[in-house]
Every structure is written in structure tokens, then in C-alpha cells.
Amino acid sequence: MADAPSVIVVGSVNLDIVATVDKLPVAGETVTGAELNRFPGGKGANQALAAKRLGADVSLLACVGDDPDADLALSLLVAAEVDLSRCLTSAASSTGVALIAVSAAGENQIVVAPGANGDLVAEKPDLPPADALLCQLEVPVDTLEACVREFGGLVCLNLAPAMPVPEALVRRADLIVVNETEAAFYGSLVGEVGGIVATTFGAEGAQISKAGKVVASVKPPVIAAVDSTGAGDAFTAALTLAMIEGQDWQEALAFACAAGAAAAAKPGAQPSLPLRHEVEALLAQ
Image (tube, rainbow, N blue to C red; front, side):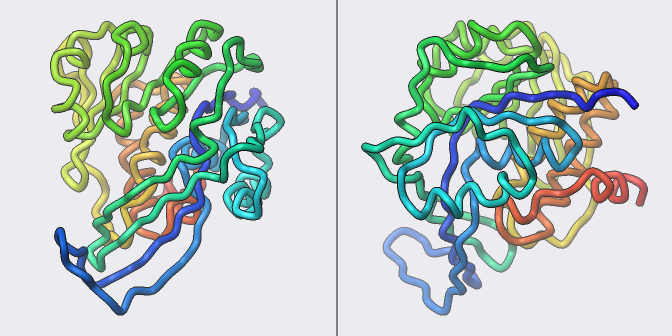
């Protein structure tokens, strides 16, 4: 049997505090009657666990606080046997926390206190050999630049949350993943890169473009949405893994959309992340 594809994820680890309500509040409004839960989260940790559950060997470069929240935030990664030997502990900051409100329709609002994620500093990072490097923007950009400089394989950059980034970092990426809001924020910078750009449109699906031309487009499987938190991370991890495996663009995009849909059908960011057989079953329907 061939070795499993390998992925290094550089990114955030958070504890998600999730309030589920009938409807999301507007500015200045208070809503009550919420159900409160605590889940492991953070885009980096989410994508690491998603890639692991989909069949990759995964290492995570991240930073947490020296506090009890770190144990819960890392619990599902530990259970899945993600390599956490490069996960640092900050004595100066607490573990990152995300405050998430989720509506009955599965829509969400998220406020993040980054905490120790901002302490992930690595001028010369210790990266193991791997097929792909997967990054997001919830840790210092200088660290991402250092990791990209050290890494010689496929680089996937999830440009989320949207913020100004060095043009050279974007241009180095072989695969860029954005949602439609992020695509509008980056504008021509994303459209002009030489690599592949995947843009997601929520329930409307996703597309892949190369040199500004759409080369694949997919509608996701129809599911009853429960919580969209983590769906984009499942999509990103699945698409990265599909590219490593050599799937063609249409096939890879369908696989990623199914992974995202499967995640949106369950509550919580990490608890909802699907196993490989669950994604394949959804594709087969």
C-alpha cells in the first residue's frame, strides 16, 4: 500500500465558545435562549484535523497558552494522532478563543481573540519533509513567509481572514483558497497569480480558476445545514489533499465541496469534520 500523503499545517489553535440561537443578532440587539458549547477550533487546527481524517499524515506548527484551555483545544488533534511535536507553548499569552454565534439556519458570526497564536514566531522554522504546506492568516505573516521560504513542495494558502498580505507570499502559493468575500477583498492580486485559485460560494458551490480562466465548477451536495463553522476548513484541506493525490480539477473540486458540505451538516468546527468514507458516500449519492 502506498504511503499516505503528508501535510504540514501552519496555523492557529483556538477554543471555540459557541452559542446556538434561533437567529443572529443585528448591531445593538440582544438575543437570548442560546445553547452554549465549547469545541476545539482555530483554522490551522481545523485544517490539520480535516486533512488527518481524510487520510493524510499531518504535522501542525502552532502555539497555545500554558493554560487548561490548551488541553481542550488540542484534544481532538491528540486523539487523531496529529503530530504536535512542533506545537509551541507561550508563557506570555493565553490560548486563542473564538466567540461564535450560530443561527438555526447554520449561519454564523465569529469574533476571535488570537492570544498565543500571535506568539508563533519562527524565523527559521523546523519543518519535516512533506508533500504540501497548508497555511492561513490567523498567525503572524512573517512566520508564514519564513515557512514558505523553507518549503520546497506544494504550498496552499487559505487567504482567511481577509487582510493585507505581501504580494510575494500570494504569488508563491501553488493553490489559493478564498470565499467570495475574500476574493472581492484581494481583487486583482488573486486573479493575476500563476497558481490555481479556488473560490467558494457557500451553498452555491465553488470554482477553480487558472490565469483568470475558470477551469472547473461544482455544485455541492444538498444537505440540511446545521453549522457552517469549519466547512471552509474542510474544503481547503480536502482540496489540498486531492491535489497531492493527483485528482483532476473537477474531481478534486467535487471532493472538496462534499467535504465542506459534510462538515456543515453537523455542529461544531472540529467535531463536524468528516472522515474519508463519509465524503465518498456523499459523493456517491
